[in-house]
Length: 394
Ligand SMILES: C[S@@+](CC[C@H](N)C(=O)[O-])C[C@H]1O[C@@H](n2cnc3c(N)ncnc32)[C@H](O)[C@@H]1O
View 1 (cartoon, rainbow, N blue to C red):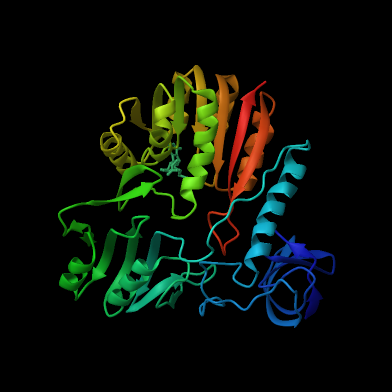
View 2 (cartoon, rainbow, N blue to C red):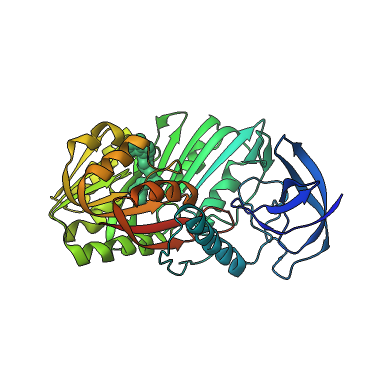
C-alpha cells in the first residue's frame, strides 16, 4: 500500500490516514511518499512500517548504525540531528498548546553530541546471542557495538561475546576512567574481564574490591553502583544541573526538598547555595550511594530518606524550593495534591517525559505560575526528551 506521511507523532512515527483511520508508520518522515506494510490493526488505529521510500524527505539521512532496521534501542536514526532537535522542540511546543492553553516561555533546546554520549548499556543474551531487543519484541539482535555508548563500553562488548550471557550491564564514569560490569550467565574469561574493569559482579557475586565506581558531574564526584540510578548522558548532565543551579543561586533557599533524588546528585550539586536539603528516593541502593556521596563531597546540610515520595510528602509544609525529578510516569495524584497545598515558593520540575509533564503542569498551574520550560536533548536518536520547568507560587 502506498501513502503520504503528514507529520510525526510524539514517538517519532510518521502519521498517515487510511480510510479515515489514523496509521502510525515506523521509519517514515513528513512529506514522504512511502510503501507501507501494516503490522497491527486495532479498532481506533493501525500501525505500519515503511518498507520502501518512494519520495524521500530532504531531512532523511542514511542511518550510521548497521542495526538500525532491527534494533529497538533507537527510533530516529533516519532523521538528521538538526531536525531531531527541531522535532523535540516542536513536540514540547505542541503539548504546551494542547494541555496548557496559555503563552508559556519555551526556551531553545539544549543539545550536545549525538553519538557516544551514553555511559551505560544493558545487553540481553540468549544461547550465545548477545545484543539488544528487537523493536517491541523479546527477540535479541546480536550487536558488536552501539553508536550511542562510549568506546570503553564497546570494548567490553567484544570481550563478552564468546560467553553464554543472560544479561550484562556496563557503566562507565563520565570521564571514562572507571568501568563497572555486572553479568549474569556462564562466563569463561573472568580473569581477562577482571583486568579490564574496576568493578566486576558475576551472578550477584562481587569479584572486585570495590562495589562502585566514581563519576563526576561538574566539580562534584559521585559513587555509582550497579543498582543505582545515574543520568546517562555524559556530555549534557552538567548543563541540565547547571540550569537548576542557576535558579537556586537567584533564590538562595533555606528549606529544600529534592524529590526522586536518585543518588542525591542534584541536591549535592546545589548544596552550596541552600541552607538545608532533604532528598527522597525509594531505591535502597540509591540512598546508600547518596549517603556515601554526601561524605565524598563533604556536604553537611543534606540528609536522605529512603521511602516513596507519596508516603512522606504530607510531612512537609513550608519549603522555599522543591525539586522534582520523577520517572516517566510523572507525579502521582497525591503528590500533586500536596504540592498544591504546600507553601512552596518555587518548584523546579525536571522531567524525562513531556506528556506526563504537561498533565502535571495542567494541574499545578492552578496554584503556580509556569515561568518557563527548557528542553534538553539528553537522549539523541530516540524520541525521548528531557526538560526543566520553573514554577512560582501565585
Ligand atoms: C529520573 S530519576 C532521577 C534521579 C536524580 N534526580 C538524578 O538526576 O540522578 C527518578 C528517580 O525516582 C526514583 N523513584 C521512582 N518512583 C519513586 C517514588 N514513588 N518515590 C520515590 N522515588 C521514586 C527512582 O528510584 C529514580 O532514582
